[in-house]
Length: 161
Image 1 (cartoon, rainbow, N blue to C red):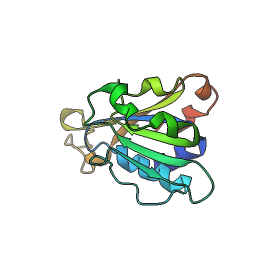
Image 2 (image 1 turned 60 degrees about the horizontal axis):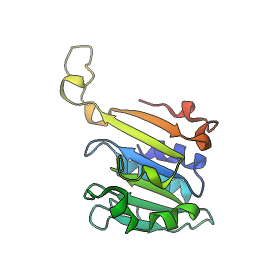
Image 3 (image 1 turned 30 degrees about the vertical axis):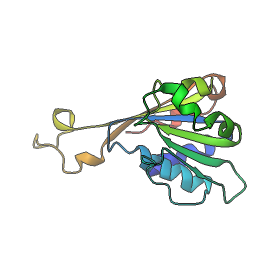
Image 4 (image 1 turned 180 degrees about the horizontal axis):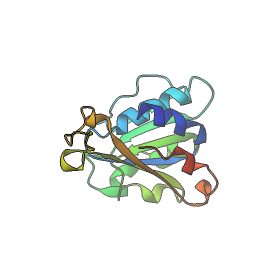
């Protein structure tokens, strides 16, 4: 997931909104860590669950990374407005974990990353029919660009499993 973040980062620019979806432990924060590394931002990218949002300024003159965890927020955009994301968005890359149904109105153009993790009966099997040992490392990721900004962004090359 961290490598995917590093691969997505060159496509991002100030004003981009990235929504990350997936169950607990799917790799949303790990992907964001890769984004932060490739964007050259300051500070360790960790889950902002308890602070809701963290700003990581650029060390390279690029955009800051604003990392938001909307898991505990129930009020949709009204509650998100308290975070002033609309103020940060034009000059930053804003990544929102658990943002579905809460932040879409912030930007007409956005990138939606859905991370699925194979578990139980959905887990791939080895030649012997038993689940593979490293099943926790298996992810299926769908990256969808919404809006004109993403029409020619080269997203199909990023499809990974």
